[in-house]
Image (cartoon, rainbow, N blue to C red; front, side):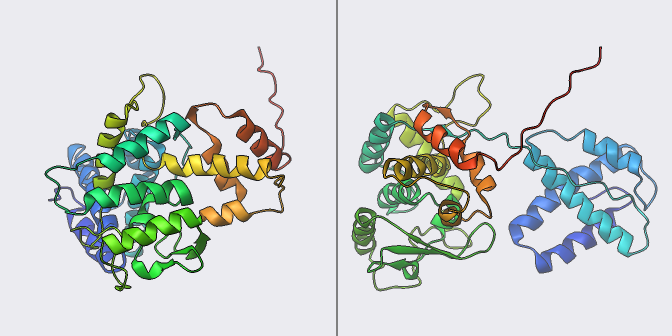
Length: 327
């Protein structure tokens, strides 16, 4: 698989990573190092130590989203540290900061009605899971009603639902921080009927969204693929030329939740200030600055929500005076 002078070291590094990292992380590392190895082989690199120049040229050749580039550089940084631990004095490149280039699409009320109507009536033909017609409507309602991330929602089990308290426990989260979140009683009632229909009410270990993956759950890719079909049936555009975003997706419900939550708080006479961190905590964010990115959106303009959030964050970020360019 590897052909460069560092082929043995790369293979040993990946073997070591397999003992402490998830299979998905190791697969991503392997993919990155296959291309890095091909680069070293192409330039006929003949040293066990990697110089700043050879690494800088490879980094400059990377393309794609800033997050993807950061992850690839992170893999090579880890490999360089591995080399250095065995005496191969190699240059350690700086890690790359991720730019926020994601702009969610915000569904308007008419689009939401069309989406719910479509998902409630869709027939998923040739689908490997007999209960998919039930799972997709429930999945979208949780994402919309709770603002949860797609992965942590797909990981829910029956034991994570407290029907009496109308709460969900999110265990498999982005930063491995369990959190308890309330849900509206109307969503609780729908979820109770769903568990009865799925015949999992008395099975605490049962997954809410079962699948045939290694984890036994419905995968993100499968859910995203079917959501695109639902959007088409709902008459919602799945692409818009010239706009720097990936189009409407399931993750957009999280941004919509933030906007509606802030609007409702303001409407109910609950002005938000810097001491009120309920929303970031609910979303699983470390600070309000993490929540800020969910207010960057395209699609429907919601001035009330923008005004509320701007009032919320006023004074958090200092103004920066930009000096005039020298002529």
